[in-house]
Image (cartoon, rainbow, N blue to C red; front, side, top):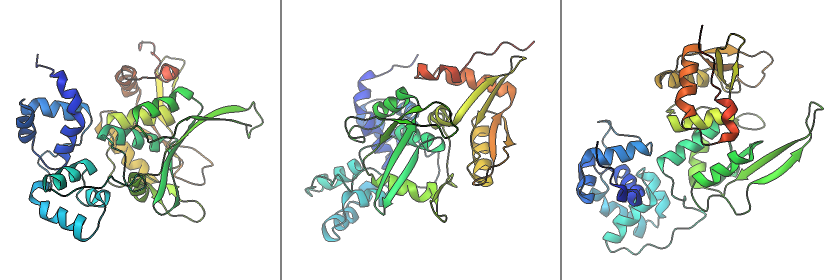
Length: 323
């Protein structure tokens, strides 16, 4: 069994920053005096997107002159430069400070709190479900989730970065039911405005008359973290009379192309699926995704182990064996 190197836990963000700024596994391993596979395992544990020999990533150490010029002469803020090189504010600060350029504290209004790749996946999974982005005006965009499960809202506050949500959240509201049934309680969390959400809004929403509509980005990649949070928000499971599970995802509000993309991503993760059409849907394809029976069982077994909310145990029932 390989050694765990638990002391590396304190350096996880730095490892991710170094990798995403272009350093190789071996270069990072040399810094921490461990093997490249140890670094690779840490990156996988935090759902970091691996390069796998793809397009050449910019090596920031080769661009220090450009970074200094943009920051000092062009007066670009650190977040703008980080966005340009598809890296973190921390990485840009590191190279500027090594070049003896004093860095002013980043503006809270213009600078993202630090997100790990896993935290970005959480937000993306929530966007596939009931989460949404609100853009009050260009440059002022925030994330919001309303849920009838208080523990879900509280879990997101715990899992997402500190300072992302103001104190005293979640907020609670009691609303009357439009169908004339009993009133229900909703728990809502609303983040501070973030540049990251402004960038996400451009790919997750398309302009329409009236309100803009949520869509699936063309380059979206589904991972297991996002898949779990999507299921928490907009997934359900029912057990039929013969004991077979029926696992479905509410995608009827997305376009047909968006549903097709999600189908291919679910299939890539190993779960065979098909679509069912729901009648009476005016704003969207009306299609929702359902897993085949044999892979519905596999999905429930796989994700029951990583469900952190006992309040959602009902979404992960244990079906009777097939007879």
